[in-house]
Length: 128
Figure 1 (cartoon, one colour):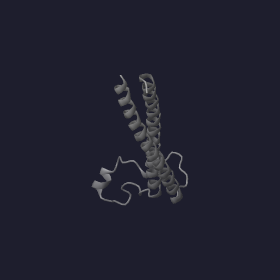
Figure 2 (cartoon, helix red, strand yellow; figure 1 turned 180 degrees about the vertical axis):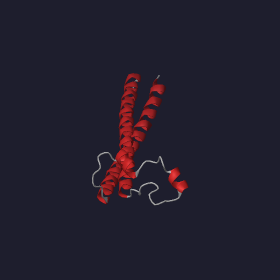
Figure 3 (cartoon, helix red, strand yellow; figure 1 turned 135 degrees about the vertical axis):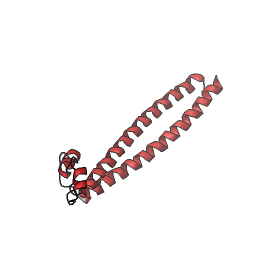
Figure 4 (cartoon, helix red, strand yellow; figure 1 turned 90 degrees about the vertical axis):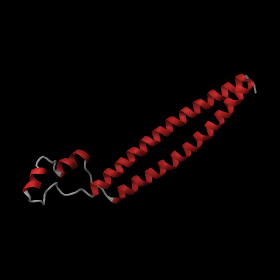
């Protein structure tokens, strides 16, 4: 293999690695969003009571005087509230599982391409 062919191979592998790293970053971003949506879905299924609603102690009431209400918090976290169910959690878990499998495949492919690139760079160095 001549130096030009080896350098072309390294350049091609660099492009493949760049594309794989970009796709891997995109998958990780989506997984973070799915995880956040899952957290919000789970939280919406277990919305706590209004802050300080059952406490009658004057000290507690004074402490909670400026606390946001559950209605305010719910409106801020879920602006377009819809009926949320356990099926939503199942769907989010299924999406995350698919993204996880894809992420593992991407990572393995990136590792393989990186190993090939290191080998090709060694050949370039050896030819020169």
